[in-house]
Amino acid sequence: MTRVAVVGATGAVGRVMLELLRERSFPADDIVLFASPRTAGTEIDGRVVQLLDDTADLSGIDIALFSAGAGTSRQWASKFVDAGAVVIDNSSAFRRDPSIPLVVSEVNPHALRHHPGIIANPNCSTMQLMVALAPIHRAVGIERLIVSTYQSVSGTGKAAVDELDAQAHANLHGMDMPAPEAYPDHIAFNVIGAAGNFAEGDDHTDEERKMMFETRKILEDESIGVAVTCVRVPVRVGHSEAVNIQTREPITADRVRELLGDAPGVALEHVPSPLRSAGRDEVFVGRIRNDDSHPRALSMWVVSDNLRKGAATNAVQIAELLVADRAGSPVA
Ligand SMILES: NC(=O)c1ccc[n+]([C@@H]2O[C@H](COP(=O)([O-])OP(=O)(O)OC[C@H]3O[C@@H](n4cnc5c(N)ncnc54)[C@H](OP(=O)(O)O)[C@@H]3O)[C@@H](O)[C@H]2O)c1
Image (cartoon, rainbow, N blue to C red; front, top):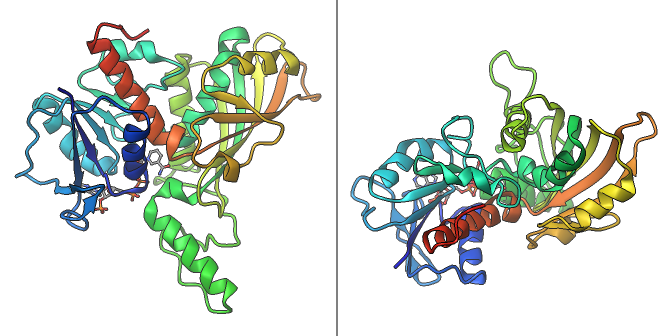
């Protein structure tokens, strides 16, 4: 009997988690949904959304998929663990904790062997980058990365998608766009050159810092240089990344295409697009080319659905690994 909880079930990621549990025939005998007072009591697929408060019944939950923001994870994850669950957390709450594994299912499943009841899912932009880069890092080592992201608004959650739609609708109907709330500027028909927030005294955003830190933790190599600019674009779903990689040993673009052609979770395309990536689980990689400005550098274009592989798919894949482990197929 496996009982799964989805915390944040009504959100952009939570809804996709529920779709994936069904699509992938996840072996759950029972799925419990939790959300805030805003949507508690509503129904999704015939299940009533429960309020996550002190009266919530956490007993018997084996796996809890959290996607309700870092504050909720900090407040509730340990309570689920104390009640017997393993928490797979989508927020940034635990990613920097050295005792908590940060896992991309195709890249470092071995990190699941030791966990204190909580497993962290990486940030969406880092996730897709790792699926594309790990095979190259294993083959020739990565010395330095320069990444520019083109991140969709669903990466900020459901409210940001509604905001893009409302601004675009107003503009197309000759009305003033509603004032921005999710971002410091209008997002419709615009580009915001700093995705994320600036911490006091930092000239990089938290999104940029996440990619720097998480890349090194997942690839288990603190020496990798990471230069990153995170940008928000008016795309509903699908993050894109222009990536320049400086490797330790030389490698040709043809060899990279071969490596990625065999890599789990990667699909090669000439020019991937977020619109075509939406609803898919693969990380699409294209425009792989040697960078003539440096003897050991390559450029590529990496695109993936941030709600799926960037969040929900990886969380469910981790849950599948845990279930298989319990059934006697140990994680790598
Ligand atoms: N969107 C992405 O691409 C992405 C990728 C990777 C990681 N993440 C992370 O995943 C988390 C959720 O993101 P999202 O995009 O799905 O956000 P979202 O669309 O805003 O959804 C947030 C969800 O959390 C619930 N929630 C909020 N406060 C709560 C509380 N106090 N108790 C219980 N439930 C609460 C909301 O419930 P109500 O509907 O009742 O308000 C909703 O179900 C965030 O930590 C985010 O950083 C997101």
